[in-house]
Image 1 (cartoon, rainbow, N blue to C red):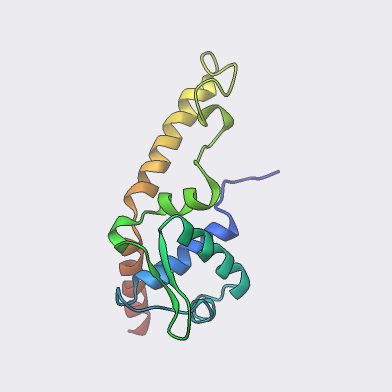
Image 2 (image 1 turned 120 degrees about the vertical axis):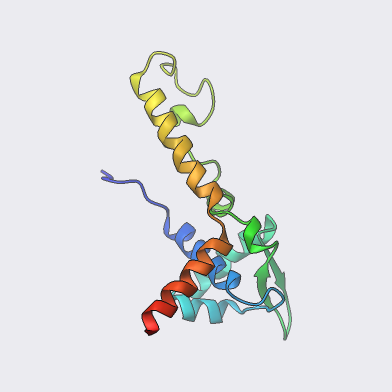
Length: 147
């Protein structure tokens, strides 16, 4: 039994990888091995995640000797919600919130409205938090750690 909601390891690794890329110069390509080492993420798992993110345009990949990955669009235009939904599909706190008619009791269940409001607020935070925001926070935290 789960005591709390959490993002998956894949989503966490994807977010950490994109934050790494968001902190690099826009045109720089980074190798999966470089990101994996810097963020302590299993390389083969990260490679699979990055391939999926490339297919939906969140990342750009280049093959060959000077290959690697970079963000597929500006970091300010990639939200946490984009990344999570690219890997797992639409976010829903409960099955009744996936789509209208998914639950036969949604019109009379006291949980529906409360969970709907919680989901709305949760999605609002994910949708306004960009990779640029998270990269800036990472730099700030690292600068404070050096003092």
